[in-house]
Length: 92
Image (tube, rainbow, N blue to C red; front, side, top):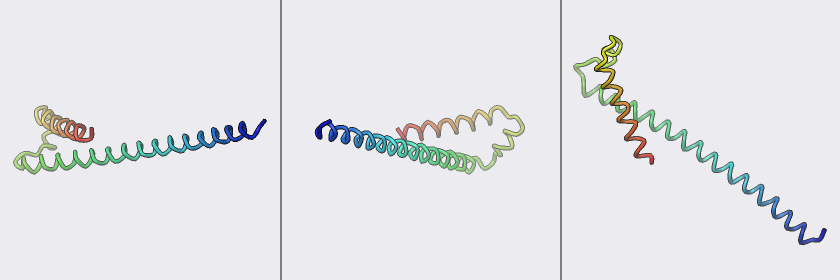
């Protein structure tokens, strides 16, 4: 085995380690962004439901849902889905 062949083998093994390290860093970034997106979406949903509750002070939404009021359930579901779509589009 000559010196050039040994140097090329060492360079390949070093490149393989750096590629694995780069892949691990990219996975870490992806997981962190997924966590940040989940927290942001959760906070956005909580804020939108609180604002909706404040805007409809005369109605107890959650009490109506507990009474199996289908209309109020559909309205709350549409508020949640609408907020989720807006947050999803802003993330993209």
